[in-house]
Image (tube, rainbow, N blue to C red; front, side, top):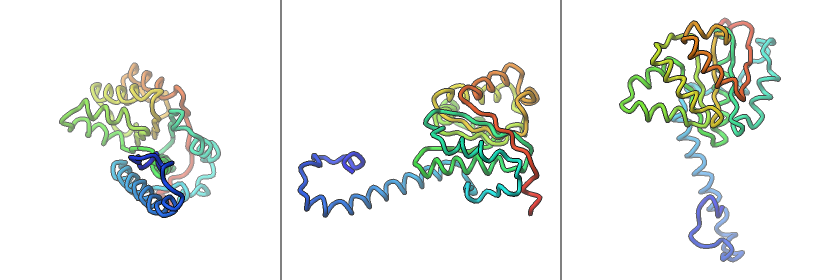
Length: 219
């Protein structure tokens, strides 16, 4: 409490009666601050709609590597600045899992942003201060770039994506969802750029293959 609220006087100077009186009030203040922080993080996260791990239907696609994914999520992967890539065809649940991972982190007070590759390119392109935008995405604690493989960046845009991922390397965690296996990234990036991006992501990273039916076929 003393640390969170930055008291102007030493906590040790309070009497037992004063502590008993102040404790519930100050606990409520700390809770309100944390709730407001999470609300701000959610607002900036791009998580619309909200996806949760407990809502994911693992039974629909039993081929999904549930244990591998959950083992990754439930460790201190973001503290270790680990990356992971979810690779597979459209509709198998990659985006849900990525967004749910970001949501879980935000509930713990960790800043996270989820954005499609298409929207990321447009955000940079339309930015009045491109360097500030690049720095924002380079420095956010957890960045999820969704749907790599569905747009074809020009060389300049590809270089900007590389700059973001390169700056994040070993300093923050990156989640990628893609329909392309690493050997196919030359279809959307020049060979040298694709190799450089994959090299940064693979360092302290995991590549997880997701197979199965499309969840959209259920609707």
